[in-house]
Length: 87
Image 1: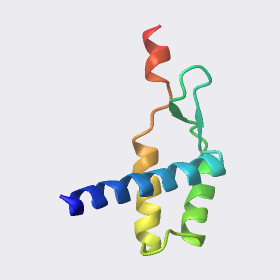
Image 2: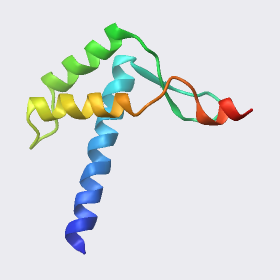
Image 3: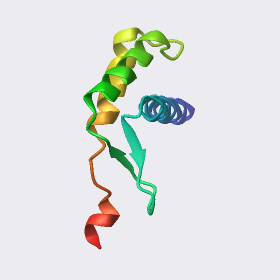
């Protein structure tokens, strides 16, 4: 069981790193009311996030893996808050 927990923790940490990179680059922001991440749809910010991932990937991750994680996380974030849509 420890292997599964360690892997799950590593995945969450990697996703957290990618979210941080995207926020730092201005590619995503939080819904002010609910806190959900929202895509800004800014291609320049997305490119900055990719450049940050290439320049400073997490230890043990290749440049390609770091960039892929940033892209995967960005692809999983919509441009609207799921809770705001329901209101």
